Image (cartoon, rainbow, N blue to C red; front, side):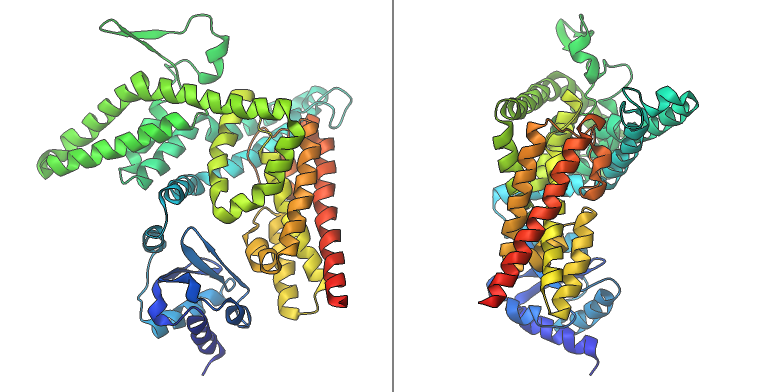
Length: 467
């Protein structure tokens, strides 16, 4: 019997047997499973399997970390042993969602909407970071930016800024595509809806507070503001839900022969009117209220905001609730020009990486050292799940010390007023997204996130072994 086959059989047994497995698929590094009862999983037995590098449960899915390349071979044997058949990621999500409560389903829905568009947003954030370096005063020269001194670079910075800004300028188009797809409608209509909300004929949302007279339509005596929703999240989210439901309603009632002529035009027309008359104005007000709420907290109690969000962000990741704050970050960037939440995310990721790195240094177990070393590097580059679920939560104290380091760093950077102009890579490269004036304070926070979790975790690991 091959080692792959033997490991697959051990994994099935540790998961509670093939009768406990509803569906199975895999991604680049992990088996993704829908289990009937996660309480039957023997986690200790699972961790002792040579090919298994970690396991965790999130959003109703049980995931077993195997590693790139090997996971394909393990999955093939896994399917042969269990006889479950090959499932898609959507099948697993649908199966797992049956066990979620309404709040978990809402959080999962937001995650499913934002995760597909994250690469575009993060890429835009990195490019905006390059633009920040070129245009930020005081980085290379006193009170002057790089392009102020080297004017021949100005147009290059301008092109980079245009490329970087595109994802944020047309953000409703990205959200519309992903949200309508999630809600069961036609993604193409979602794109059209999102772009409609930022049409050039509308007053740009960023100029709303600067304009003395807001242009309006007069709809048979009903004035409707001609305002766009650049950078806004709530208007397009709600409008996408309404569009998908209207489209599905019409498809069930209009004959197939007439659907091409009637479904899309009626759906867009009705949703468009609702978006500009009702959905847009109401959600725009709600979005601004949410922004004002967070701004007031961090203006009046900066240290407390840094302590809570910086310290407990990693717990949000465990529950999956961190995806809901992406919408808040985007709203803050749109309304105020920067977010004070995202910098704490970047430092939280670094803190988890430092705790995992301490386990790499302190441990004598070769398997743990390999997992801790690679997952620490991953966390430093913005992907914390391997470090958190494979190492830190498994031993608990590294996770707690990472939270402590992240909380202290959060207090420091929020008191200093550090903000990010965009959402980028949430690790060491995260400084690129920070507004240049806050780089010094952010690097101090980064130093705390690097040192405090590492030292506390390493010392505790050594004391624990000495007992």
